[in-house]
Image 1 (tube, rainbow over the protein chains, first blue to last red):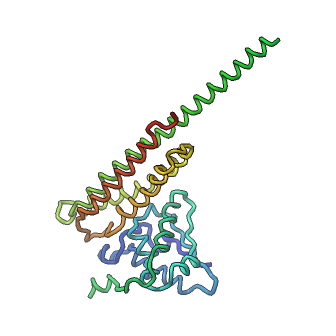
Image 2 (image 1 turned 30 degrees about the horizontal axis):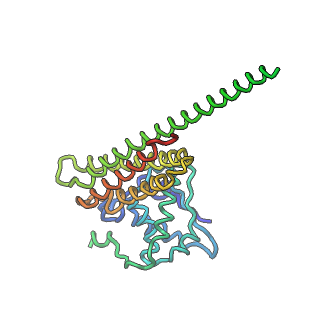
Image 3 (image 1 turned 90 degrees about the horizontal axis):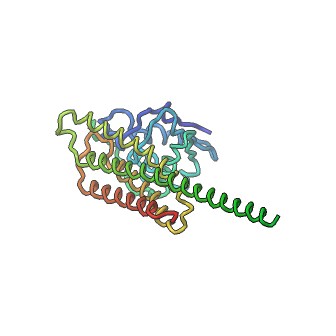
Length: 127
Length: 156
């Protein structure tokens, strides 16, 4: 079992969809997916799961961050929604975060596999 | 002996009716109270969300501060909204003739989250979006209407 604690390992102010939304400052859903979630998913052994802790030291989320950060894995063709849901455990202890967990799961379920080609918005700003 | 029994039985029945009556009143008042909180929150959310999506913060003084302030407020509302919706729908679940409206309350809260905090929410390059503002307002009012329908006349 591997873990990502968003508040501890990434940022306690997750916000925005793309790198460009934050003018390349830390915290976007795109950055979370590219630098945290995808590497962690890639490092899983067969049958191993990834637990993402969503409520530690984080005040809340917007849909833009959650949909890009989690459903983007499916949308850009890294794995289909079934496989991602098999590998992912969304964990919280604060009951107020159940709502966000449910939204994440629904975004993943509703996302179409490889429906878009990924182009980093960080590159587009720098380039 | 029979008279004493009758009086005791009448007293017991009166007590039970009284107890049931006040139990219903308490349940109704609790539902009304949460419904009112939910209605106020939906109105507050509508105001903040419309201001957010109609404003071009880059063109106004202290725009970045105003944008961040609204984003924090909106995200805070989405901690409160699901909490109140869960409590409200749970307390309203005994209203068998209002089940459709009760399910709409939950569904509208999810829709509002997706609408208000989706798109380029929290983007420093966010533009204005009149169509989205209109959809948000419509859905806030649907939510408020469902709350009113559930509260109105329940328990009668």
